[in-house]
Image (spheres, rainbow, N blue to C red):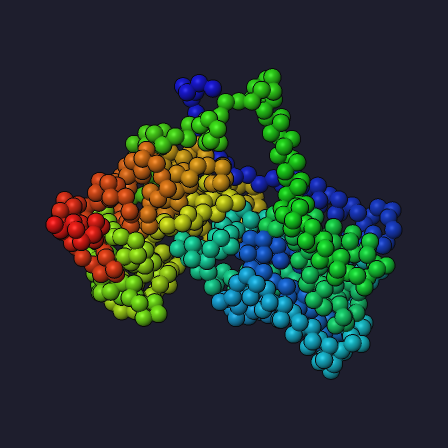
Length: 624
């Protein structure tokens, strides 16, 4: 491939494929009228409402990373709530189902709120305990639930057509699944999904781009619980009986298996996983006492051998087929095209010098701040177990300047950055962004006021495209309902936001990689993507924590060009960096820390000749 090849960069357009929905709806409408055994219609109904519950868990675990082994409890709330109101209060079945869903959602939201400080294994144990408690309540509250005898005579969902109750139930439960799948698909493709994925990667990272993590975690717990409750309500009206033995921890594990086997976080995973789960249930019906052992074995095998589940396997096979076809079309003879960066796996054209050249078009950056925002850090201190990491430090970052914060390892630089960002709370002192006191605000509120940052350790969503990573930083321009209607009608989702994100990528010389995954790009490019996402937040103040760590000289020069151009766009910058040549070349003012104390502040020339700074870096002999 010639170096002179012209690469025309066009913004990728997000399109939604409606064909699978059209095919599914056609089959769905015709199936009850085909000459098939009624048992298969019953299985289809079971598939519909089980897939609804599994879809909720897939969003909760697959997108946001919140583990729940208590979904059976919310399934039970939906079942009991709908059964009791229709059986004992005489409510219409649709209203009873709505009530069951609402009760389950409230229960899930409460669990989400109380479990905010737990994650991972502790969160799993918390949800397991909730599910177990709800199971015990169902067994022991005999006057309400009927205990072991259960509730019988639950009315069917026939909508006034008792002779066609099976068909009516099929259509209502199937239509509900289609609606749920549409919602899940929209969540996956929209900002909703990006926010949830950011929470899964790191809650601190998510908050730093303005995501109110606590609210989002409670909301996704409530939504997943509502879907479990809807599945449970359908179960109650299909079987006509609700007994506590149906909602044990085994059901929660079954939902988990369906989610993992289908493919965590994938669009088709819940459907594939539910099909596989129902097949497993039929196969092991005769050896039911070994059910938990079989479930556990299947879960272990899938996690070890097929971590992306059935959807991942199918997607991998499809990608191989497409790659083979594309390769043959591209070369004509099946030979491999040239690769950029011999043996490095670096994409063609992905050189640091190329990036630096692209960065010369600063006018392409759709960001322009007023340049009049200052940052005032006054006498802040931070101690850990009695040891002062930061001691009465004052830093004044003037508007429209680049301010460097340097010092030996352990001097307290990153601690100060993290206190400014809100990750740590200062023990004393104050932090002001312009006239706004940030001292008591959380990370997300500071981010939404114009404070953006990069991290010492890269923070990107690895499973989505470069463009989607930058989109994470862009403020939402429309309501979610507006986006959903646009998406549903086949329009371009977040069109304005995508154009802005693409323009930012063009400024950074990364537009040709917009549809790539960050993991497919070199480390230097991933650092630029993180910086591009921070710029997408339209920051008044940009915090850079070691922006060129791990970069080579060319890449560092490219970053230096970018940072100085950002200042010309009215963005004030505070950076921490160990590379003195870099700091001296880009900073207007430098503050120096040593052992948590501020020892000097001045221009690069003043800092280079400051005896205390020289001593801090070179030792006591430097004075002599």
